[in-house]
Image (cartoon, rainbow, N blue to C red; front, top):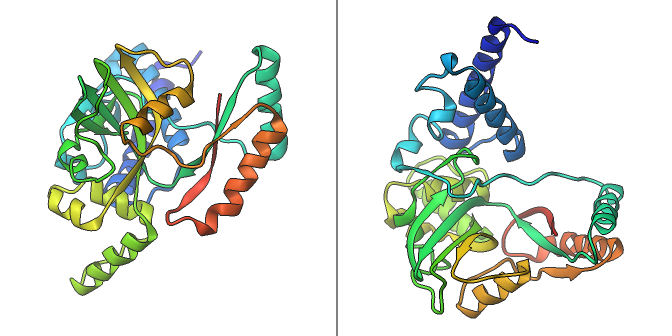
Length: 290
C-alpha cells in the first residue's frame, strides 16, 4: 500500500502532466498524446482525489476544463454522458480477435464499420426537437464547454428536428474540409497571422472562438456518429438511430458498412483506407462498433 506522501507525489505528477497537455491542446492546438491517454490520466487523478479528499484543490484539472486562455471563451457544462475516447487496435489479428470474442459472447452480433473523422467531438442536446446546448468534449469524463452559439452557424447542425423525441442527445465530429482549410490559411497569411498546421487544429481553434462570425466564415462541418441519450423513443440498433437522423436531415458518418464476420469487418476497414485519398476531409482510421 502506498504512503500518503507517495499518493500526494503521484497526484502532483498527474496534475502537472495534465496541465501541460491541456496547454498543448487548448492554447496551442498542438496535442502530444491521444484522447485515450488523456482520459486515463484524468480518471486516475479523479480516483486518487476521491479516495484522498484532503489533497483535492480548486485548481486541480478535475475541477476545471482546458487551458488557461482559450477555455475562457465558453462556460463549463457538465456532461450528461461521458465523452470518452475509443480503444485503439492496430493489426488485422487484433481486429479478428475482437470480432471473434464478441461472437463467442453474444448471439449473432452485428458490427458497423465507419470512417474515423479527424476532427473534434461535440455533443448536441435537443429538447422537444429544439437545440438547447452544444458542448465540447472537455475532460471527457465530467465537463465540457458550452459552444452553442458557434454550433448555430455550422450548416450541418440542425436547430430544430422534426418528429423528435422528448429528449435527444447526439455526438458527432466537427471537422474542416481541405478546401476550407486552405482558404482559412490564405486569410491568415493575408492578415499576417500564423498559419494553422492542419485542418483538425484549425477546426479545434475555430470552434472555441469568441466570435461566431469567424466560425461562420471559416466553414466548419459536422458528422454525427453516436446516440448518447434519448427519452420518448427507442432505438434497438445503432443504424436505426442513423436511419432516423438521416430522415430528419442530420448528416451522419457516410458510407458506413454493416458486417457480420471478421472477414467482412476487415474488408470494410481496408475499403476505408483505400478511399482516404479521395475524401474531401481527413480521416485517421476506421471505427468498429458493436
